[in-house]
Amino acid sequence: MLLLHAYQLPMVYAEEGIALMTMGDGIKDAESKMDDTALWVKLHYPGVFMRNKVVIGDIIETLKEQIISEHPACIILGTTGEFADVWAWDSVELNALTKLTVPVLAVPGHMPYSKMKRICFACDYKHVNEHTPIDTIQMFLNFTHAELHVVHVSTPDEATDTAQQAETKLRRMLEKLHPVFHTLHNSHVDEAIGHFVEEQHIDCLMVIPQKHGLWNSLFNRSHTKGLAKMNLLPVMALRER
Image 1 (tube, rainbow, N blue to C red):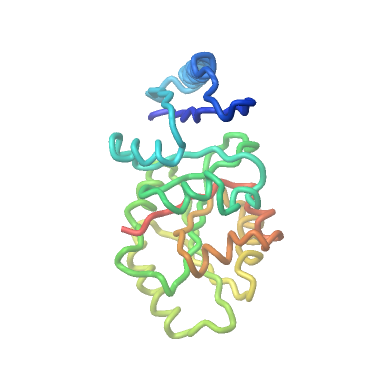
Image 2 (image 1 turned 90 degrees about the horizontal axis):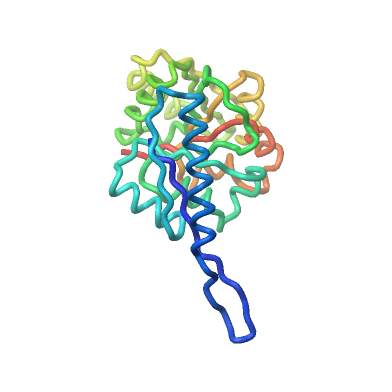
């Protein structure tokens, strides 16, 4: 495991213009905090081998570089504030969830650690194909030993025959994982899944980011009711193969 902190160079405004602040103290402070965190992990989770690294640069560009050099299976990203803030178009978290080439697990900063027992894959059946990342889902389930629940929200305008064919295909693709399938009938996707994750005590929500469809339906900033329920659990952005 690599614990990474990207130190972005702060800027100060002076009468002469913009000047770079002295970096030394800031970097030393970041390195000290990283060492403290690594020590805490070692004491509480002695079975976890972890390296820590402080680099200078933009967080997204830094993560892209680390993906090339480290080949991570997943990036875990702590978030601050509410998911309604995360989905701001210029947020680091949103860019990481949608633009990086590996799966990203966004964990709300206010969440205490607990074992994942029930994971939900929110799936838009019209996007099920040979690129659906079954291997990533299987890897994550092997690691967590959690139950898998597959949720599809059927809206009034959905073609029933097409959805049934896609569900049959996905059942075959996931059969080794023994998932439980759920079809929710609701014209409001965000509210339907928000209620589902709350009622079923889901510990993590998996979604494939796409410009249109379920991702936008779930995480549109105007959907305040659905987003409020999403604030209570980690969200994992999967990548199509």
